[in-house]
Image (cartoon, rainbow, N blue to C red; front, side, top):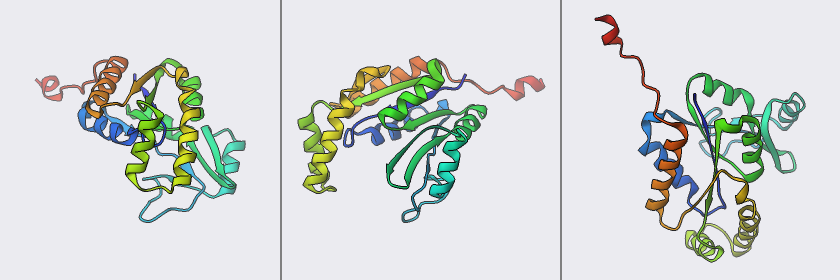
Length: 201
């Protein structure tokens, strides 16, 4: 049975890098990244159905009324993000193991609906001080934004105990190895395709 792997972590913890490594290290597991819907406009070279499904705020609200989301959030006024049930159902029907990069509330909603079919992983920074250093070294945010990110991180970290597994990213390679082992143990051996040549003999 195909599974759902949920990643949640404070900004700057290295979650995106870990997910990229997972795709590289376990290609036989047929992972697919869950594409979220959003009501914001595309940025740069973003394409509909690739980075996001882009829909208008009114369409998004209509989908909410019709209970078409597993989870959603209004981040700013009229700016929504959410996971469509059709996106998940389609991928699972195609025997694709789904990867989610999502916040705490979204992770808990998915876990609640898919129960033992979903594995919720919280990637923890070694400490708030380490996280601050990583965000400052990244040099992409103003000091005020970094303080906001750190305040949010502390709130998220306080919710980590609700997850199936907490993995600390102190050393990236060690963290990636642990993530790989946890996921292999959760999913089991990947399904092998039928050997058609043997069938023909």
